[in-house]
Image (tube, rainbow, N blue to C red; front, side):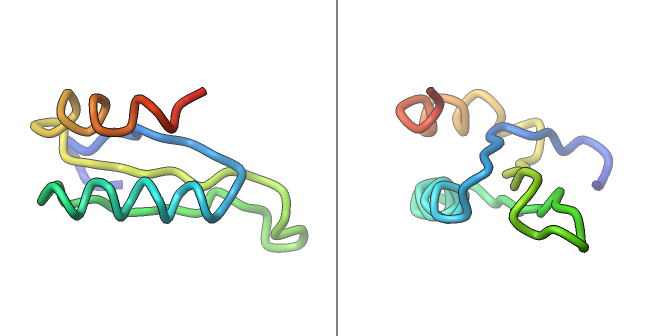
Length: 68
């Protein structure tokens, strides 16, 4: 991942990653979803949502209800 970007959300469920992405984008926070999944077994592994470190606090606050 690019320098100065950090993971603010990690999940094993694709729909949760998409919800997180939509929440952030609706608040004008640029983000990227990265699949950390095994190519042999795509159902294993996590999806991560990354934002620039300048938006870490805002992203964490926006996603606090998704993080269990």
